[in-house]
Structures are given as structure tokens and as C-alpha cells.
Length: 276
View 1 (cartoon, rainbow, N blue to C red):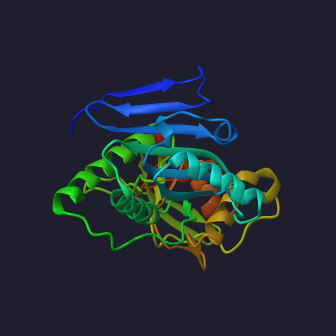
View 2 (cartoon, one colour):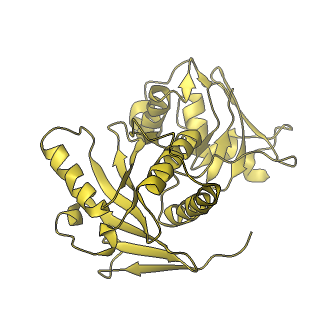
């Protein structure tokens, strides 16, 4: 692994507006644009051939994303706006992140779209709204290698822009120190990871939640509902590894009530997380 140099440019001088991001020695470019700026945008770079991500928030607070491809990304984004206005789309996105490149063509972006959708689904951090992709695009071996490198660069830039849609859930290593959370019929196993704490597949949550959880731990209550709705938790069991952003978020979801994760997560010897 080598260090990467990324140039971020705040086009209008603010992080809430349009941003471009470029990696050194790469012919691709990332463009992050708020929904509110799409209709009036006339930039030439975003009119290029590329792939794009539309980031949405579900009613339960969960994250979702639509991944698409277009020979003119800006025109396609404007079409998404028109489709929503005419009720042809039922999801509402707030931000688009496009990736364009001078060497891209229709076949290449179809390959990229399919790869990105597959990776996003495997990562499982976002609900993927894209229904169909071109899964049988025929490319030369050299083209596939080039697009895999393009995909790797997209992973780097989209994470830099604040979206972990293509970031895999952390995996335990041989020297990983495991933590345990037990109580209220729950028994979970996890480990500290870069984004917070990862709870492992097979962990069991409580058989219910206390009445005060919905009011005193509202965000965690909603998170538990979201995980049950999207299939992460089925019949009280985690169906896949899931990374929480804090120990208390994980222990609250697991135990069904507000919790201090620094106390309720312990190692195999019963030592509390705060004392490790």
C-alpha cells in the first residue's frame, strides 16, 4: 500500500456546495453535488461519461443509494429530478456523487455500474435501490484490469467524501481481542474497529425492548428497528457482521434499553471496556 494524494476543490468556497476530488496520476474525477444545485448546473466536467451515486435517507433513518451510469451524467441527474416530480421515482436523494473519466465509454460504464452495485450490496452498509444492471458486458482483459483500478480509485474517493457505501465491514484478525455484551436475554460478541465496534454474525439481541427505550434512547430504538427491517437482525439473531459507530449504540441495540457501552462490553475475563 502506498500513500495517496487527493486534491479537493470547494467550487463555491463551502463544503455544503459542489466539490471536486481528484487523485494524482489518474484520469478520473469525482464530483459531489447537492440536489439543490443540479437543475442550474452547467459545468462541462459533469456532462461527461461516467457512473454516479444518489444518496438517500429512508424514513427509519437508514441509508440507501441508487447507483447508475450515463453517457452524460448531468443530463441523467436532471432526468432523475423530472422523474421524481412526475412520480416515476419514489425515492428522494439529497446528494449525488459522480465519477467521470476521459477514457470511459458506454461498455466501460456498464461494467463499472455492475461492479459498484455488487460491491455495495456485499458491503451491506446501504440499501441499494438499483434494480437492474448489465451483468454480461464483454470487455478485453486489459479493459477489465483498467476498470478494476478505476473501481479501486472510486472506493478511495467516495470514502474521502464521507460515504462508506463501498467500504467492507471490518474483519477480525488472528490477534483480535473480542468483547462480549450479555443481559436481558441477549448475548453478543464483537470487537473494536476503525468506525466504532463491530458486532459479529450470530450474536443474539434481547427478546424485546423496555418501554422507556423509545423515548430515552430514541435513536438507538430506531436503529434496532432499522436493523430488524432490513434483515440484519432476524428472529433476534444478527445475520451478518455489523459495525456500530459507538460501543453504547451497539450495547443499547443488543440489550433493548439505554446502555453505557464502556461498561456493558467486557472481555472474556469480565474486564470492562473502559478499563482495557
